Amino acid sequence: MTAKNFFKKIFSLYLWGNILAMIVIVGLLALGVKYGLDLYTHHGQSVEVPNIIHKTYNEAEDILDDVNLEILVSDTDYVKTLPPDCVLEQSPTAGDVVKPGRAVYVKINASHTPQKPLPDIIDNSSLRDAQSRLMAMGFQLGEPEYIPGEREWIYGVKCRGKQLSAGDLVSVEDLLIIQVGDGRRDLNDQVTLVENNNYYYDEGEDEEEKPVRTRTHYKRQEPQPARPTIDRREIAGSTEAPRESSAPAPVAVPSGD
Image 1 (cartoon, rainbow, N blue to C red):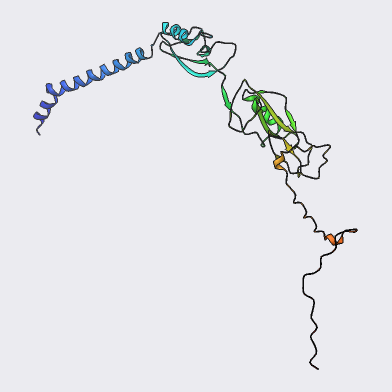
Image 2: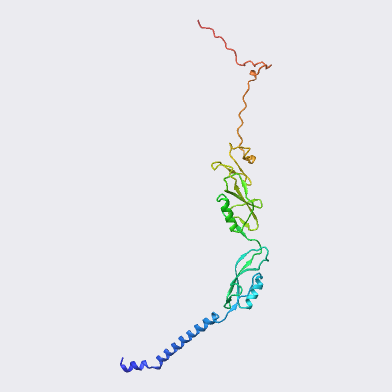
């Protein structure tokens, strides 16, 4: 390529037209990004979050919609003294200044008492640990019911007279009764659960101090000794004469001598 042709291409209108078009496109993209972000983020705009605590969900939604804010339910809880479906908590709180279009997260009051699964505390925990876990979960506890067993050890949990197992769903409003050992047995004693969580001791314990509570069909039936056969001829003063033997009398055989 000669120098004349090279300079001719460098200064051609086609080349510089393409360069100018690219510069314009890049400039437009930069301006679009700048002003587009301002519009998207509501740059320079702000609203004050209204107070929607104890408002119903529909009322709170209307109040937030008037100031260009959204409402989202993040959790539910239960307060017996408040009507269902009302707002218990909100985030951001009332009075905070936020951008328009911001979501306000609320906690709604449930229409019924929540149910929670019973933790694995039966035969797996002491009284103090079980009480701490249940109270931390929001359960209501009554006075413990003491039964024969290892002291302060959990043997069962009752609710409304019904025995519970680990994982059963229980309302936090229901009263739980923990069945705990009273320490009236040794660790080596065998204890068997029979009915309604009643325990009984093995044979050999003091029955007056520790009564045995078992079902009738749980008792083992000992075999009765066979009655001895009595010969009626041995009864003194018996009027019955002994029977003569029906076997034939021996016959004398004459000697061959």
